[in-house]
Length: 502
Image (cartoon, rainbow, N blue to C red; front, side):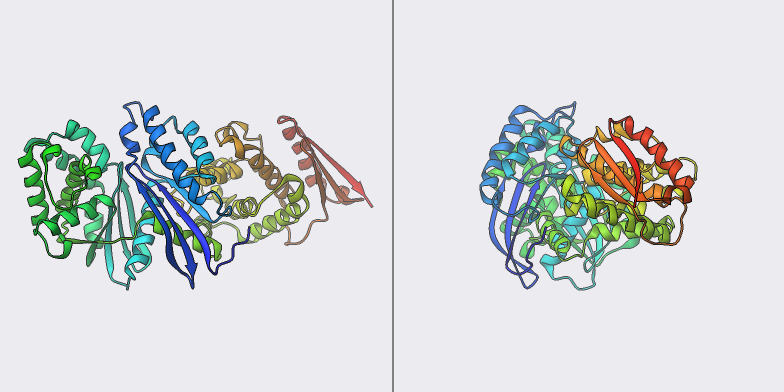
């Protein structure tokens, strides 16, 4: 996939727990000019029950919104739009059917991202919005189901955390029906403070010079304290927060609250968000906080621009992990060269896209990281490290697919792991695993990097390998490994044949 980087139209959609956001922007000279922007407060989190099941009504609200979003982005080219789901879609146990309908409504694939990846993207959006210098800053974003905290300098994040507390979840738990009292607010603040214990010492030790707030909740609070005359220019302080809390409690119920700057759509979820914000001010010793217009969706745009411009965070992540676990660079090159050779021959028949080759390239770099734990069953150790590590830039599905690919490099075929992937990606993942296995077989001897004279033909149920006459006799161990692969692949109803020809 090739995208022109001048005057390109890019889109980003954030399927948040409280609001869904869409932004479409035109790229000019590496800067974005907004073309279209939509936001709807779907309150997806409100439809999540105690068993982590999304209600039918919440799904219907969400899909109706996405149908409207889809009218704006369906015609944009594949690869020019990024759509991510956050906390509620991470948690919901019945999200698969919803995501299939959502993908159809939007016309583009949807990624579920983990909390730390959400934090990274939020910081990226805020950093670009504020034209950062190298001042150290704390960025806080209160979502519907989680709150992200990032400390960074310029465009580089130094610490990222996502805590399971948000404006919707806390409002539901502590302020059901919109009721407000001193006891309810105190309980909510204590609950948020308890969650903040996990990060407060480390964050205070790192320190920052300026605190920045993102997201609707913090922008709403800034608007209220400015309009009510409790703070200058909407800068949030602990004193202005106390005045806001006092005004809400005095009303007794959010339906009765009359505050300048408070919208009706934000009203029901404000108490939970304010409790989280107050706890953060107290536990992290925040003196004041200003507000940024940049957030997750803007971060998505800049991250997408990086991928298009070959400045992909995922590449940096893979290289960092390879260094951390002392992966053998020469073996990486051997396996990678072989994968390129095989891919060139099968890409058309198996309909491989650039993203599939990229996944194989990452697998080549990381397939042996499990050796840092033990040689015995190292492919399983490699899988575990990749499946359970924080991989900046990767969606949940991408991370798991990479882990499964590495898991399948040797021994029995990882059928049960492949079945956990979305149905539409299983076949291509199985085929990628086959190529990685073959590349491993031909390079198990760790000889000097070079091209192995192998030709490959593939069909739906068969792989044929052609080698020069006499090659197998010269490489008896490789022949034994190939014959073992014949047996392994029979388990998945795939026929592997090896022939010699002049």
